[in-house]
Length: 287
Image (cartoon, rainbow, N blue to C red):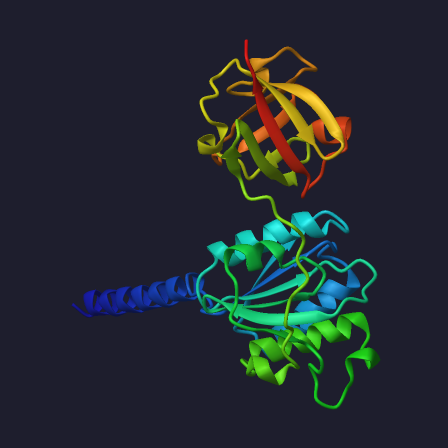
């Protein structure tokens, strides 16, 4: 009987330990900071910023997304994607700033705070989820002027202030009109499909903001005449890359339900000098 009691006690202790371990393993932070940057995560600047955040707010979970170097327009699309898909209460810091001399702004949209340079990187977010007010980040730390702060110190201090839930009006003056670049929303008019390139993948394929509904009555096998920035070319509407012979241009609705423009076993971006933000106009050629 004594052994049975001892075994029962041991079983209870093991179960309690197992439950404690499970709670520890599956316990997630209810606060998340998302960083979008063209810097490698292992750089001194990023480790300095992330280390400062972890030291001050160990409860905050940090997610990191790296974009192409100096590509503000592709970063603008990625920033909008994460702002759109992360939950209310998430904090965002976009650090893509060629020249490191832009004004910086902070704003809140749909219960999410966003800190970024005022260089057009918030273009898609302003277009899709505008904020009530935008504020310049003039003084992230009260006793220091922005002009006196090294780049990495500025972003660390500003991010820490953002995470402290400091009122946005305390960051600086209202920014009356954030810098945005012209966006070509997808539309079908006058027998022409208009849109723009959202991003270019590692193979040079150009993914646009055009969906099936903006292609009119086009069917698989139709030929499009395409004008994209300063390039003009023809392209077959197919179902996948292999809808055309190797080396030929093809477009199709991809798995994300967007029009993808490609060269079968080739690099469309390099072939026609296209990048994120390139405006695209397609006109169906009768066959």
